[in-house]
Amino acid sequence: MRLLIPTAVFLAGCAASGGPRYVVLESESYGCGAAEGLGCGLAIAPVLHRIDELEGVAESSVSWDGRYFRIQVLPGAEPDRVAAAAEAMLEGEACCVTNSHGKAAPGQPDQWFNEEQTVALSWHEAGVIASHYATAIAAEVALEHDAAQRLHEVLREELERAFGQAHAAGGGVHRLREQLPAAWPRFEARLAEFLTPQQSDQVALIVGRELGE
Image (cartoon, rainbow, N blue to C red; front, side):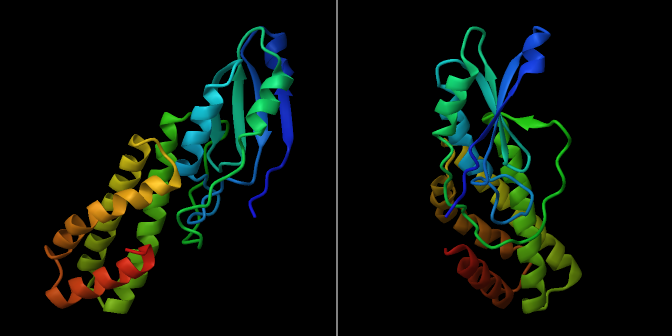
């Protein structure tokens, strides 16, 4: 079960100085399953979209780790009411990858990502997944160093493309699953550029097994 921490903080200091007013919500529902310390960009993007449409919201954004949601409140809107409405949307969606494949790079302090910018989280996730699979597959198939490096590049590029297309289609974890079948023929063709037919078959079999293709 995914956990929501019902914590809302109104940053009153900003309001006192005449600057933007923010409500910050905390949730444990949007961590990336593949990369520790990273938010799940595909799950977060549609949530930010819905929060942005709420009455009284100027813009919403999320922290790098997906734990904190910052909501800018429009002038005249009641922060408590905005917080309650936004909190009701933080239910969480199952991650596309549930097993950790490594740790994410640490985020920058006070860096926030709006709906459009959450693709950066997904691209970082793609890099973590690609690194994990490339290392494991290279060992299992006994690839030479250059081939292993090329495999890493291909995996990262194809995953980044699939994540990007999933975001462009509206986000949501299910969008990634929709993109993978179309990417498969291109992925196999790229493997054939630097692997032997036997190696290509082995790599494709392993990746297909891991990604459920």
